[in-house]
Length: 207
Image (cartoon, rainbow, N blue to C red; front, top):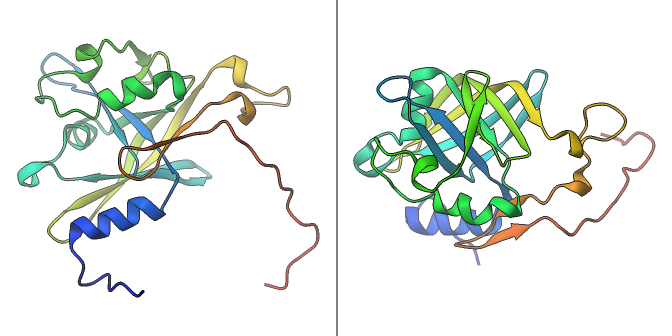
């Protein structure tokens, strides 16, 4: 069956993308309101990924809120130029899901749901996250038709890594010690316990 991407509804396009582009890493983003009471905004985004490693950079796609109003995460990172990506593992799954609730701009998800944060590189990180990346906004691009999306490109300024996750050969994380959560279709999440090892073939390819 061929489905014409130009004619299907936004709802159907979203359903197809989020069903087949799986699993998707989750960026659990902390931003800080530099004005007013300096409250912490905390929200998960599954249109998130790594971009490059020299310098280390990440991408984050944020759809507009209702009525085309920028979401708090985007508004605060535009105001401060900073945000922090917190790794979501199984021990934080339910709390991460709670922070997807829509709260008034003046109300902090971290405070509302009792999630502790600690200062990190001019912003804050989630205290229970064993890995976090403090980032600065490098570029922003707007895409989409009726449903507008802002693609944010961030450069990683510093990593927080729990020392118990490090291998003995430098600063690399032993992936077998992580229990990452990924987004699947609808309300479903993937848990990263099962691992398969395949080594790359030796020699040069013809390409």
